[in-house]
Image 1 (tube, rainbow, N blue to C red):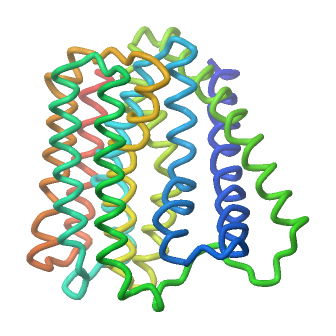
Image 2: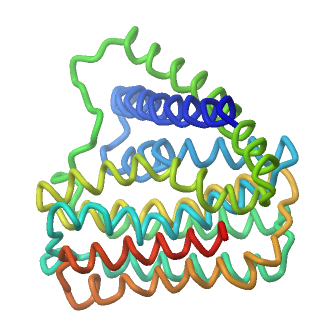
Length: 310
């Protein structure tokens, strides 16, 4: 068990570091090639920050552990709302009155409903994957059309005007090598832990793997809360959830068939949807995510995990 935990920890560290390196290299390369910051933000940054979840899910499908793939996405989306929003609110109040994430939030809800419907029609295969990727494409086009006016104000993370070609190449190579290696370590360790604990790979995907791959979102949301940037905090969660549902399972579905655990159909999908609906008053009514709310959201997530592991 100790070696398995070390594998998981090493995999998570590699995924976070390699994902960050890939984003830095790809952002600077894309800008050098003449792509606009808006296009880079919607594509390179969005896909790059979701690379750890993507590699883990694809690796899980290829190695015969599809439960980790579907559990990772469903668990990450639930953790992104209850844990990633709840924990930062315990440290710094998040004021959402001035943020405008209504359109993207509705897109996330639509993606959640589409994902649930396709799971109910599962197992997820290539045609499910094509539908999810088509939905992702439509949402990217919509985000591009509605974001052009704000392009001049955008500031991309990882931009370094002085970064030379050599450093860009090093970042890209480090990301491309580190991501699959980290995914391999994480999936191996998580699968072994599931066998040792006598629980399903799906449960490990919903808990250990999901929380681990949500750590970058947690760090981003915490920084945004401390800086009083509610748009960034909510946008980070909403955007990540949309890419998890549409992009990650969309690609994984093209790689191989993903059976849906009956327990996920009965319980976890609806917890994910309920957590998504919990965001509505913060998005539409501008409710403040205060410390009591943070404690409540975090407690809900702890209760959810306890139910899974008991």
